[in-house]
Image (cartoon, rainbow, N blue to C red):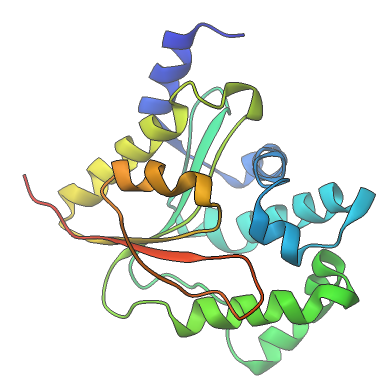
Length: 211
């Protein structure tokens, strides 16, 4: 294991990710979300799940998150947080664009779980708050370093930037184990927005803070 202080220092001083980081970060996120209840519900099961998750995160990072400039990672690659800034693009866009993404969603969810994935995305879009805010889409830490504090450090570092901008922030928590993690960061649970029959997806809000 790397020196704990070095790991924490790297997470406390993240850099912006570039498209050159997309492959390594997709592996990081896939390993982090392999046992996530919501992804377990939506993504194709069995031996193909790891590849489906890597494909999902690689495409989201490459096509949406990284180009919009608010994906932050530690220099050692063990922690990453994806934000979307106010007004950023969240969904594929109009009907034609959404239809063009359908083959991708089939590869990720599989035909048997496609309706689950689409229903979840619809619920997320329907319940997304209006008004200007930063949106935390994903946060990941290398599994071998869970519990070290890297997630808290990288979240704190990026929230400080959001606070400096005087903006609120929003996240959807897909794992009950993460509730206290977000609460320590100042997020407050609002409601479960998941469709009927799906695992909980808790909308959480953090008011703007000024120093």
